[in-house]
Length: 391
Image (cartoon, rainbow, N blue to C red; front, side):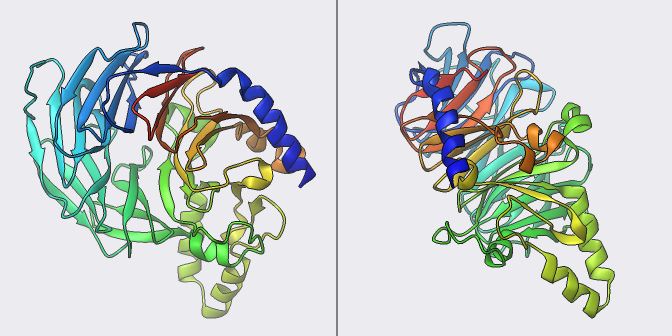
């Protein structure tokens, strides 16, 4: 506990310089989502409860360069069309709308409308080849949309038993996505076949752990992040998971998949032994998982979040992927130097929490840009978009 307090104090001291962020103005209600352009590194796009999509150029004044009123309902999620960032997809209610920013007009009419989801969409993403969209919704389903046709390609169902909060394409697996939801499950889907298999049940993991400090909040999966293709040589094929119990978990996806396949093909006695090993970690932030693969859990004992983690990203500035940045309902943003664990192991390094930023409102979304300053963008329950510098 003393070590945790020391880590938190050091991180808070580092965060003092973040007390006065830039504030970008353009929304009339709380902001819900933000994405950063790869082609234009200082351009970000945000959405809000006001049904607006705002484009900001951080080289300019702190007001939106372009305001798009695209819906009477909140815009819940945004993504660029991969390879053509003049095209943007915005989810609102049960609908996904596609816009071309080059067709600037007073009344924004979508080029395409996708109305395949039955309930409110929580996350929309585009795959690396710009051929599919994935949309996760409150019904627990994930819709895969072929944007070249366009048509509904596949409905992924009977995997989640509750709301599906988030989905991401796996850049190293052409026809697979990973999803997470309020059933505490992390699932891998082969969307060409519509099949899923469980990667991790964080509810079971928490139940088997003796760490009961955050037992009030279930380990729901609120967000997931996977490294970009050019990060894979350093980060391995991993996934970072934002959990409802305040924990950020980092797992090796390929190891977990291999472990599940091994377990399913083993006999009942061996399977029982595998289950007994899953999640057994009484005092460490690393548990053994199945087949001995390690999972890293960044929690309050390391100075982490004390409420649900709502969003997270791998950093794009400096050494790409060096940091995992998480935001939570405790109104804090945590910058994790998770690579220090990767390089030397958590037991040998007390500096895994790089800094803490007090945003002052619950954090809804965040993104980073590849710049030395003004490189962290935060959307929260206020009307202004906050921009911080992380070094």
